[in-house]
Image (cartoon, rainbow, N blue to C red):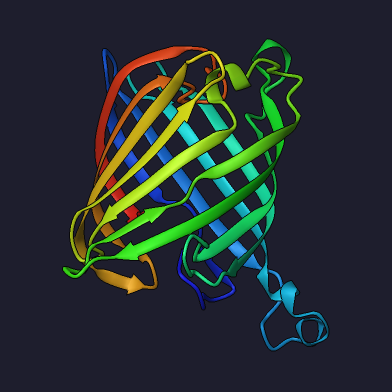
Length: 239
């Protein structure tokens, strides 16, 4: 969650990984954000908090390479509108705050249709240790505005994504996302990456990427389907 980024910048990780368990699937994700107002623009001079307004978009796809014709199993589309800004970062206060509205759907109709609308808040705490490694804790808390296509989603996803990131920007970084539903169902995703080249700019570079997933909801279509351990390896541009 770096500050002072250009107007168009990376949001969540961008990766392409292949593997699975009992079949071959690829999982890939594209994500960006766009700051709506420049810090020196006239609207921001009138009302400074406008400088933190962003539009974000993230797309995550599961590609079934092991089946005939290699169809896409499911794709999640997540446009969002949020505010992001630095905080005091003193004591228990987070270093950064993010909050807003997010829509998520898989673009299908009928029995395969899945969609939700949420309001979310995401405080971010960051600690840098003497050896240069950093620990980032960034839980994303949300409430559902609409989930008619999947009314029991909270049983499997809950109301928070517990996100932890640890490592050195010039070496290994481990990112973990944990979810726990209201009935005890949940999921865990671990992403481990290592740089293969120097960064091109900002957070963009080239990384060897390992990913593990186990539990419910690897895709929005299968939010109530439990997956065995899925192990994949590939490449990421943003981690």
